[in-house]
Length: 341
Image (cartoon, rainbow, N blue to C red; front, side, top):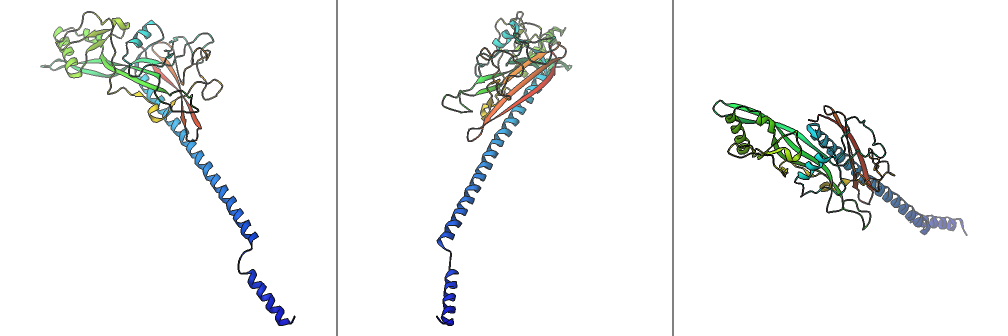
């Protein structure tokens, strides 16, 4: 082969090699692109799942803390706390809570005037998961003499009950047998003026005018004596200014729909977390009850201290299910200082 022919052949071979890629090169390139795409897809999916779970954690944290502080604010204005005794159970039975019934097994705490802020002693259950108290609202300025004018300031109270309720739908679903959600209810009653303060008005005409004003202008139908049991404490008022001589034998403490908050969690796809003493976040904090006998179902209350300065210790555990099934659990603990009449 001549030198010219050899040069021509090399030129043709070089041109052929520069015209494109070999099949092997293309295959390797495609393989690398697929691998990179899979890595990116897995990274994006992991990031998405992490963000969804963190969103559930934030929601559980925000909702749990918000509700805990709402209850603390209410109980801080308390003027009477009820214990798990005949008197407390009597008041609980008088509440009109048929629209949001208490979860079976829920109980009030036993007020321990000499106790300490710590877990219950074994065999002495003091912790409850239903908090019933009377909060003091703004005093009512009632007209005693319209010509004076003479105004009488009457202390006014509202019953508040915080308790777990079994809802009608599921929030956390692990399988077909998952139970319906447990909601947290904050129930508030109508207002009741102080019976003793009304009766302390010496002038019968002024006292009658105060009652008339309470009935006509504020819609009040009963006054409450803070010192007595439920069957000895409610006195009917009428528009003529009369006060019943005898207390109502079976009073019904009605809900005030304008202020009563009802269920505070399930509507936002949050629920009280089931108690599990094997889980650090779900375990009972105050209760030492055998779980087969009683569990707090995500809400614990303990009340200790003398009447002039009680401590209400509350522990709330909520949970939120993120897309993909992961469940975010958030415990919230707070202490409120209250006075007890």
